[in-house]
Length: 331
Ligand code: ADP
Image (cartoon, rainbow, N blue to C red; front, top):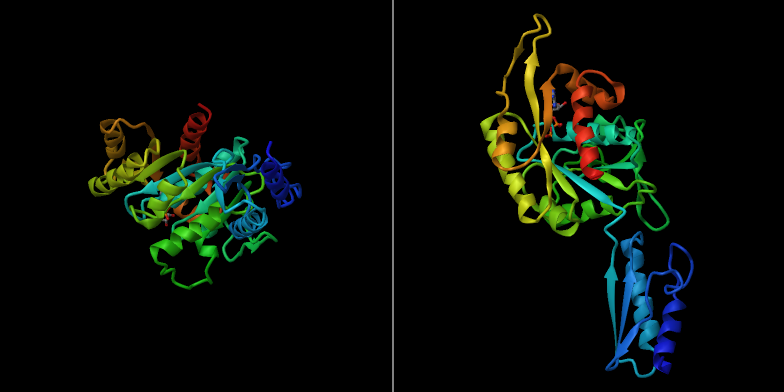
């Protein structure tokens, strides 16, 4: 090792990793810097270091290494481990098809199967997870690293919602980049043990969804649709967004299929039936299951007690779909 390499390594290791308190090399965050043609190159693995801290570390590295004689420039590459965070996006072509309802119940059902699950509500247009999960009005705090600390729910799932980042009643009229940035804060929060995340995306194919697929590369996506033709056409657009970004489609879910009359027990299909299954087949994707249209599913959401937790109406359908997702994750 040349003298300058030793000096660079010593200078880098004199900077502390905020997680372990050890030097950046001793902590395993960085290999020894490389040096050629006056340029010192540093790679640092920044998983679990807050954005603001990363910038400070970058400044420290540039200053310390740049001060060494013979160093003309310091280049820093930051890498972040994608493993350890399994993101499953739940999307739909349009709003009101039950995407949030499904996302909440899947998160709970996966947690009941022993996974450490976080629920991320990125639906800026209608952040409904705090209500569905029974934590309306609870605001997340920030830890000393300025990372958000998720709100625990009664159902073994921690959650964060776009709705918790703004004052109640304040319309969320963020421009796309602001919303995408806010989503980053939710994903990059202090999630503790959680390693499997259900992301409730906004409906359609806007900035947040694009950022999601491009920057955060979910492990898979689930698309929800009602059986109506129009909803299915929109759903296909949502599928395309994921396919173009090479995000695997876990499968399609049909919601609001089949209404059982509480008086006579007859089953009718207000929105048709079977459309999503046919669409899934047509596009070569799996069909994950069907959730009936049930008054109890809506009231459970309004009361903050999801069926997957209470075992009430609809729970079998949600659990069956969660089982397929569990197997998919485990494959
Ligand atoms: P999205 O997230 O797609 O906008 P939501 O999950 O918020 O849709 O659902 C829209 C409304 O429909 C909510 O009031 C919800 O409680 C209700 N809902 C969703 N799925 C069902 C269902 N299977 N049966 C009855 N009501 C449902």
